[in-house]
Image (cartoon, rainbow, N blue to C red; front, side, top):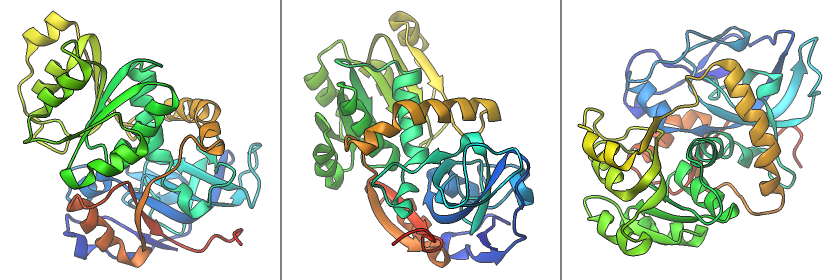
Length: 336
């Protein structure tokens, strides 16, 4: 099958499609014909040699095949699989292997594509919506009437976080580039503030009050950490889900202690298999229905054929996107 495989750190134009062995599902695994895959920041870090992938992926696929989320159709199932059958439309967060024509996924880690959503568009859902929901709601404790701050509000995670916050009745402010603020407002952001170096903390206080926000969702890190500590309220929570800035910034421990702030670092990729399954099953119960009734929708910035993967990486690296960048791997075999 065709796949994009990491070998040595390369620039975006060094990425290429290669032939790798077809995967074979185990007894509790499902073989998926991948229709589309999502591009994520972790893929860019992996390409630069800064984020190690697993040594081997399910089905015997080389561990260095890129891709943390996919959507497609079930081609075959293992002997003990009970939840899926060939032809089902599915999507998933995976540890790798999304940039390929086929992938093997444990049956309980797969999610159904919500009714009314095209399979090719569903690849824009799993990683960012699960990340945003887990960070804001499960770990951050965001509920109706509370306030959240989301950095990089026009990113894939950011656009998902805005929608999730509004769907549960919370208030949300975001930071983003000047040219992306209106897109965030259109998604429902209550306050859209220019990102650093603009003094966003002053604008946030004008919106949220001196007490600050209940939850901060940050994908940037670096110098924002100190400002996040000032922005969050007493007994609030900062959830760090990525690092686009420097990762060696000092922490204001006195502020952390005085305000009794919870600072949580989290990723999906590095979690134990059973924990990933548990989060996926809960997401299916609690969040997927919000796609079917229209309260949530994927925001797709652009899409590229698999052979143009370098162009997709270059667009994300330039911070040009609003929402998700997708790779179209193959036509939907069950589509119209």
